[in-house]
Length: 355
Ligand code: NAD
Ligand code: DAU
Image (cartoon, rainbow, N blue to C red; front, side, top):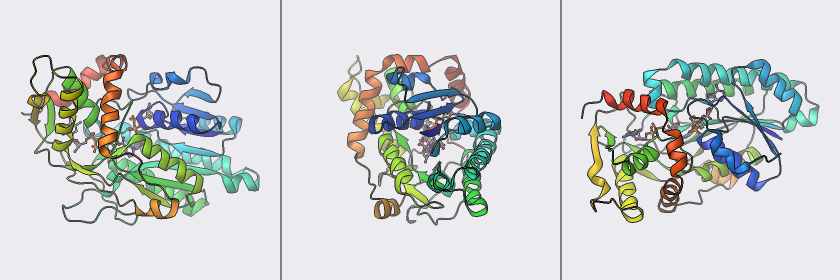
């Protein structure tokens, strides 16, 4: 079996569901169930015996060591993190605690477990760290996309904490020989994404008749990848990646934020028109920019294509349509996540922004 951390979050849940659809190998899913973790994301599994859910924190070294000793997984796939840039600007400490200290504790537990495995099991063991393109910082308009040798220059507490975790993972390979793999992926979108992130926030606000808050000039560029393509890349890296290597994962799909928002509005106009017949784009509102906002990310995904044969299966047109349809088909999931805590966050992040 494998141990997954953060498997009740957006990408983790998609990974767990995809894994169990592709394989009979069981998963132990360790998740703290922060505001971003949601057991409903996994409810389609029912009581599937291949899925063991453990409510716990990656900072809890005895808990993790106990899980490793008891279940003897052949791999750890590490998604658990604080993941939202805006939250890291309001409260960086949780990011340091989970993304840096938590990753360190997980590495310590994995090292202790791995060192005592029989030789063949130790040789086959993998620790796969799921990271982000944000560690590389911001690209100029004409700069080449991030490859695996791009210098690290994180600009937010979130990206700095992920960069620190990447360095720790690398060090555990260099210093102790732990067979680690790191993936640095671009912006994901798809089912089960918490509506604090751009795409689900715009869909949820549009349907609720609320403003669609575009930061600054809306010309910041992200490289969008459908979440199932990211999960397929992780499965492939786990299967065939070389220990110690990093793999950049992206969609070859750079788009400015305003274009994303207009695309969502047009899809909603088609699939769920406003009752007054007006276009959703009327709800677009410019708000004050995110401090330290990175202008552009773009991933050079040639290494993973060349060495591991992975390429995205979805185009942006197919992936974004599936995503909008998923949110339209799951109003109960949306209303469940729009709790009091979510409203408090919206007030904090958007309440003080100048129009
Ligand atoms: P998410 O915020 O949706 O989910 C994070 C999950 O981790 C939640 O289930 C949460 O409960 C859990 N968690 C948080 N702190 C924990 C702790 N201390 N112990 C155990 N569990 C804890 O995040 P996501 O968007 O699914 O991202 C998953 C991973 O992928 C993160 O490491 C993130 O940095 C990385 N990543 C995300 C994207 C993206 O576009 N969303 C892109 C590239 C990389
Ligand atoms: O690049 C990978 C990263 O992508 C991941 O590591 C992060 O976990 C993930 O959150 C994401 O980070 P971003 O900051 O790029 O994603 P977010 O959805 O928050 O914002 C995308 C862009 O949209 C960004 O330029 C900010 C802008 N934005 C976002 C929100 C929430 C707005 O204009 N308005 C908004 O309300």
